[in-house]
Length: 497
Image (cartoon, rainbow, N blue to C red):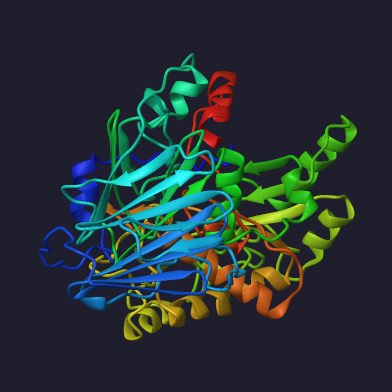
């Protein structure tokens, strides 16, 4: 379903770690385990502890959520893209606080936090007094991670949606086993079909860490997250069953806007088609009384590589060297999209993170020159031969606002001519280079921010991987390229959950 036409071989995890660029950790200083609390103060719902030269902030965001922010040397980076920048929290969550005791005790209606003074270690208990998580005595928070003890006998979920290549999965694999992450795992979104979140949860609680990438290590009694991407270590403990934990994660990382209603219906995708054929296929659905709400167009709907901006316009006019000229003659004028909409079918169009940089007759395209001059190509990625056009191409660095704005500026012509949804493909790797975990995230952010700036129409996209926080940008995901067949379709239940 929504499979690209070309399969990409999965790369080894060692390759992933060695080639990911753009969000790698900077060198973090060695730091000893936290020592004793030297001062403590409470302001509103935030407890501030001084531990030598470090700061430890404990904030009750809701009665069931506590945020802990360890700041070595008192220094903190801005929150990562995981965290919703627009979120504000109600106050008055702390019901009692004993600042003179050892441990310091802070209570809400649904949890209790205890902080031992020497050494400074934090434990969280639920409303019944049962332990949720307790920072390890030998080392709790440290330079780029945190170590906990937890109760045994719990199944862990979350972390990653793609622990093994899809092709290696047993179709008869138990659904629960396929979703459990009892050993932990790498948090990332670097390959097609990946769903990554710095979140591990059980039937009783969840742990969310503010980090782009990282690693969970889980045993029967311990839970660790390492590789935090910021200089401080900020984590959230959410108490309650999975439904409550997920509601809390949505508050922290951002709730999605409503999708357009048509996006909830059946969506047909095809590579290698024309306007005439699409019209015929749609009529076939209608004649057979099979519901159809959207049609997703692949490469062929664009004038891919035909001129300086062919990747951003319809294949509506003949051009020198065009292998399939004039495949969608009414596309650019918007007539085709309006005709489809009148039949109850909205059009989605494929988008790629790359642009052609080499002209057919030699020289550099205008878009290629602009992107290179303005630093809008992905760091460290050399031009490569693009398989569809057979010409040199390179990929946009969507982490930069200027580059996102430029990409939307040229994509807007597609939106104005009736493309109602975006199919973002291949923003996970190019020519053997794995992109960072926010490449798909930021690619859709470009289209979302651009569309919302000019229209109140709901935004919808399908993307080939997901990292937590992307849901703020009209973001849907598909599972990556799969084979046809009912067996593979059955596996989608596990994969998409």
